[in-house]
Length: 375
Image 1 (cartoon, rainbow, N blue to C red):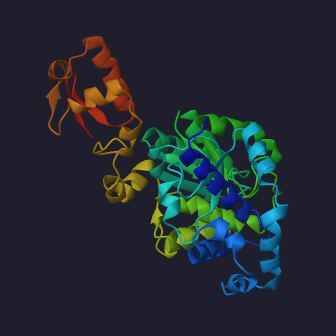
Image 2 (tube, rainbow, N blue to C red):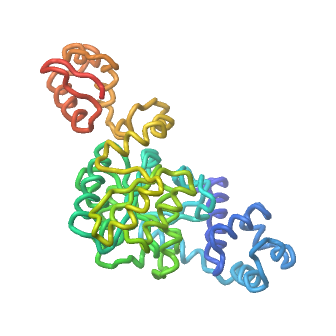
């Protein structure tokens, strides 16, 4: 049996969902309404004159809000989400991404399949052309895999081409990845990526601000792009024409105070022109994951683990207890493996196996056959 507090929170989320489902209410008007009236319940209870005093709310939207108070079947929508393991996240939910709260127009409600973790606050977006070249696909997959192994979550849009390659690179490296849709979670686009989306939900999360059954619309994808950049510390563009939607993501990233990166391509390729324009305009050139990690270094240092641990590298957020124990025994100076064994109190074979795993994640390196140090 739920407590009165839990029942109250559930009722509040239901009313916020009802407000988000009113036709014509986007994220900006949603937040203006809550700023003026305090709660979704008070929005629905407000008289017409007060509703129309909110910028962007005219007579038509005013009537839609009043009809929504009784005509929107929130219970059915919540039951639909429950049946399909879709979490409904309001902004006060601890699982709501921290970085997304910081942007100018965050979603009032976020729908999610899979799991969001504190480690996802160290994320990088990778976007690019749908009709990508073999070179572009290879670079996206390579960068995503390297950055995922370094502990960064890879964010992209599940589109054909570069997006799909980035997700697959992260998954292949055993890392986390987040897909942000421009449609509802139950109306996947493109449909052929259904299996990829399911794999992402098992190893990360699939997100949308659109209701689960919402159809993909042309105008929803530029709006989706602000979430890709908003979830990320920076955005890498891999192949884009001068009219590519990926340049919208790059512009939004800059407006949100995120870093913008671009991978250079062939000078005679149409899908390289957008990246080269970004580079001329000041984007950071990316040849390897190290270029990204070096640029994000100060941002990573300001982020700590949820349990209060101080971290030197994003990969530390994904270590198990044994890996943390071994890493803690290694300081900034070169240390013998025997001293690591003595310092962490584990069996030598277990320490050696753990050191190998930490080497792969580029957290430690062998100085000689019998000594190690942090990177």
